[in-house]
Structure formats: structure tokens, C-alpha cells
Length: 337
Image 1 (spheres, one colour):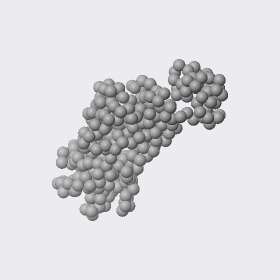
Image 2 (cartoon, rainbow, N blue to C red):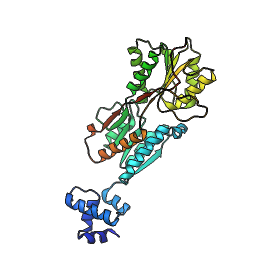
Image 3 (cartoon, rainbow, N blue to C red):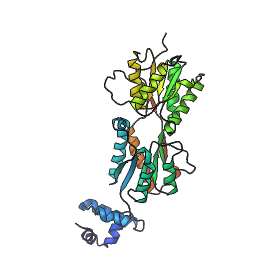
């Protein structure tokens, strides 16, 4: 059944039916409900290409991402993507993932926006000062940030409370009697890393502890960088009795370095990771971690915020901050001796 036949069935014009199906405001509510009910009854599906031409929309949301090999092994990232995809599919929309090199990521944003390839963008791994968000805001292009940034104007975002999560980790280790706690950070231009470092320092201060500059190590977002960072800490003097890692990917390398040094986790040295740990060969311990609960639901929430942004909901109302949870494992424990 084509549009003309469907419209004749309802004794309406094809234009009215098309506008009702596409949500145009000039169609009254009663007519819209009648058209939608009939479409469901007769299994009518409008032509996708025609609908996009009529509305000027692509029915797709973009995610531009500078992929690293470790990203595809991160269960949290994959669950978030699954949640976004599921929620958009319920609205007959697609998630389009565009891989971009770090060196020209902003240029990719320019091409996608200027070419009107998507209706909106979800921006991941926000930076403290993020030129991507500033560009989208200047262009008045719909976006939702997965994380926060320093922007002067309100913008839609979803995030976990990074500072609170890190304070929980430090409080737990200080409660075990640890006085020399190290931190392995992601690059500090990334907003979550800066927030987690601030939470770490606030946690030390609340426990009456001082930060040791040599034990605040900027690692990276790969297992190799995590291993190298931990190896530097192991040869420092004095050696820290506990370590917090601010991301789950570098944590794989941190734990490898501790095992290679012959240290028993939770006994010789304690470790807490911020983030759900990916499965890893040779991992016998249950890692103590500050986890971001329900990542698939978080993905659905990002999609909900995006849909609300497209529907015209006030931007200042489109923010959500979720609380992380500390899950005890056996990689931390009382101070040795």
C-alpha cells in the first residue's frame, strides 16, 4: 500500500497523512491519532526516503569516535553503545558510528555537520576545554555530551559523579590504614580524569593524608601505558602501599605489573580500579572497583536526552548525574604488617 492508497482509505489528502505521520504540529491531535492508529492496524510503513525528504531529517544520530584497539574490549563502552542503539531503534532511528583519527577529529565533526549527515551527535570522552562541544554549540547543532566540560552556555550531558567515586576509593583504603596511596591517571586534559584526580586529592585531604607528587602518575588509556606507570611507581622510594587506577583499560597493565613483581594483591599491595573491569586472561582476583552501574541503561539515557533535545525540550533540563558504586573485591586489604 502506497501513501496515496492509504490516504484514500482514510478519506484524507496524502499531504495531511504524511504530515501526521511525520509529527508536523499543524496537524490536529485527533487527526494524528487517527492516522497513527490506522497505520498500526493496516501495517502501513511510510517510504523512508520520502519521509526524510519531507522532514529534512536523516533519522540517525552520530557518534564520532577516535577508536583505540582497547575500546572494542571494553564491556562498559560496548554496553553503552548497545543501550543507545536499542533506544533509537524504538523510534526507528539509527546510530551511525564514525571512526576518526585523533589528529583530525574536529575536521570530521565539520564534515558531518556541514553535510547534514545526522540529526544530532553524541560526544564521548569530553575534554576539560572541548573544541568539539564549542563548535557544535556555535553551530547550534543538537548534541549530548557523555561527560562534562567547561562551557559557558548550558548544554545537554550525562555523567557519573567522578569525584564522589574516587573519594569512596580513597576512604576505603585509608580505612584499611594505608597512608601512602598512589594514583594512575588518564591524560588530564580529559574531563573525567581531571575530576577523578580532584576527587582523589579531596579524599586524601578528608583522611588527613598528603599527596606525594611522585605517586601521582599520568598513565594513559592502554594496558601497556598502565603497566609502564605502575613499574615507575614500584621503583619509587618509598613505594606506595596502595594504588588507585582511574580507568579500567590501563588497570589491566597495572595489575600485570604487580603480579610480575611478585606482589600479592590485597596483601602485599592494595589496588582499586575506577570502572568495570574487562575479562582478562590470567585474572584470578575479583578486583575491587568503583563501578558505573547499568551501562546499557546509561546508553538508553543518552539516547533519551538526544531525543528530548531534538523534540525541543529546554537544554538546561537535559542533564543527568548518576552515582557510582564501590564494589569490594580481594585486591585491597589492610596495610601489611
